[in-house]
Length: 202
Image (cartoon, rainbow, N blue to C red; front, side, top):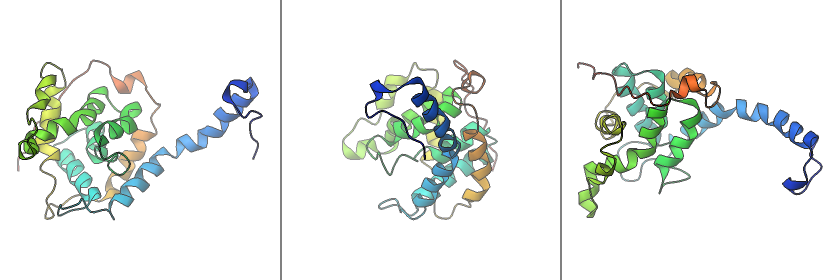
């Protein structure tokens, strides 16, 4: 394989960086494959102490979003909201948000980025933490979206008896999202906050 001429980036030529840009294209195109492989791996990783695996949790959240009629950004966001658990357990929410941020609506990325602190509402007091720490964001336009995301799709998705869709069901959606042009303004929709769809009637 052809390689660059430099050993320090500052010494690289125009030709070097054109070569790198060309060689990077196939790697970037395989992002969805790497994300799906990570999810498959989470299927072998039981959430410590929980009744389900990390993958099952994501599948449940995404299935609930799908059942509520959520659009593809919300469904993929729900599926991948904890994808950062393996490499960044202390800040998995921000890690997960960075994985999807170039490809989904800004509202969805913000919710995924902040869902960790919003989830504390359900358990923080058991550790002596401030369960209302999310109130620091009370004036943010996405506050309601994040509170609803956690209530409807995240905190409720630890049920081993819930009939989730399979990862194969969601794979085309993951591929569609990651096939988008990164940071496309028509996708990111800066300033647009729609909230979650109405809850499906059981």
